[in-house]
Image 1 (tube, rainbow over the protein chains, first blue to last red):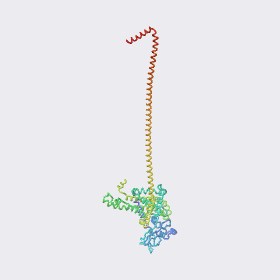
Image 2: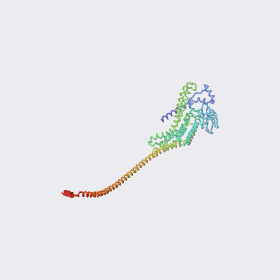
Image 3: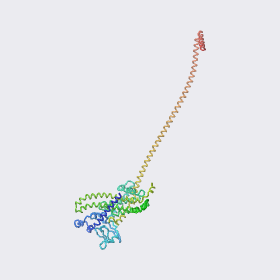
Length: 385
Length: 166
C-alpha cells in the first residue's frame, strides 16, 4: 500500500511538472495581455468585445495561477485584494502595498524601483527601465503573499479553535465535552492513541503527542482551507500543495528524529548488529540514505497529493471553457458542463478525503519514524514486564 | 521548476507561523486538553474500580451475612436441643421420683394392710376361738345331757383314734 501510494505520488508529481513546464514555455505570448496596464473592468469588457485583442483561454496558465503563490488575492472578476510587500534590500527594508505593482506597474520605494515578473517574482528595475538582475538577486522578498496570509489566518483559526476548546475543558472539569470539542476530541484521542501511542510506544509517546496533534491539525486545516471554494481569504490558497509547507514539515520530522534517536537506533543505522561485515558495506550506505529518504518521501507525498488534487479539480472545471472555446461555442459549453461539474464535485469529495488522509499519513509516518528512533532493544522491554 | 523551488519569503512565514502555532497550541491548548482528557479517563477508571470494589464488598458482606445466619441457626438448634434435653431429663426425673414415691406409698400401704390383716386375723381367730368354744360348750352341754350319747361319742372318738393309729 505504501509502495503504491509513493508510486502514485511520483506519477502525479511528474504530471504536475509536465503541466508546469508546458505553462512556462507556452504562456509568454499571452502574458502581455494579462498584465496590460490598462486592464480595468471597463476596458477589459471592451477588449472582450474586440475580436482581435480577445485573449485565448489557457487552462495551464489558469491552473498554475491558482496553485501558485501571488502578491495579491484575486477575489472575483477584476477585483484584487492588495497584500503588503515586504522587501529586505541591501539599502534597508521596503514596505508598500502590492496594489502599486498591479498590472505590471512599477513602484519606486525608498531604496529602488520594483516590479513583478509574470511569474510573480519581485524584480528590481534599474535606472534604464530594464530589470537589474544583480540587484534582484540581492533583495529578499518577505512579502505577505497569498499563501502567507492564508497560513497566518489558518494559524489564527487553529489557535482560536483549540485554545477555545482548552478553555471549555478548564471550565467543565472532567465532565463530557460539549460543542465543537465533542467533534474534535475523538480526533485528538485518535491522534494520541492510534497514531502516537501505537507507533511511538507507551513510554515515550507523551513527549511527542502535542507536536503530532499540531502537525495533524495544521495539515488538515490547511488542506481543507485550500479546498473551500470561497473567493475570500483564506480559502482556496494552495498552501500544503506549495513545496515550502511539506519541506518545512518534513525537515522538522528529520530534525526531531535526529535529535531524539538513541544509541540503539544509530547502531542499527551504522552497523546493524548480527550482520556480517561484507553485507554492511552495502547496507550501511543504504541505511544512511534511508534517514534522508524517509522524510523526503513525506515531502513528495504531501506536496504531490495536494497539488495534484488542486490541478485535477481545476482541469475538470476548465473543460467547460475549453469545450466552449471561451464562450464562442455555447453548445460545447452547455454539453460539457454537467459532466465537468459532476466530476468536479466527485473529485472535490475525494479531495476532502485526501485532505484528512494526507494529514493522517504524514502524522502517522512522522510518529513511526520517531518510534523507530526512540525504540529500545528488547531486553530493556523485558525489564518492564 | 518554479513549482519545486521553495520561495524564501513563504519559507520565512511558514517557519514563523508553524513555530508559533506549535508553541502556542502546545502550551495553551494541548497541555490542558490532554491533561483534562487524562483526568477524565482516570476518573472514569477510578469510578469503575470503585464500583467493582463495592460490588465485591457487597458480595463479601452478603456472604458474611449468610454465614452469620447459618451460625445463628446452628446456635438456635443447639439451644433448642439443650432445652429439649433439659426438659426430657426433668420429666424423666420427675417420673422416676413419682414412681419411687408411689412405690414407697404402695409398700407402706401393703405393709399396713398386712399389719391390719394380721391384727384382723388374730382378732378373728380369737373371736372364732371364743365362738367355737362357746358353740362347743353349748353343743356339748346339749349333747352330753344323756349318758348314752356321751358313751357313743367316746366310742366314736376312740374308733377314729384307732383308725388313725392303724
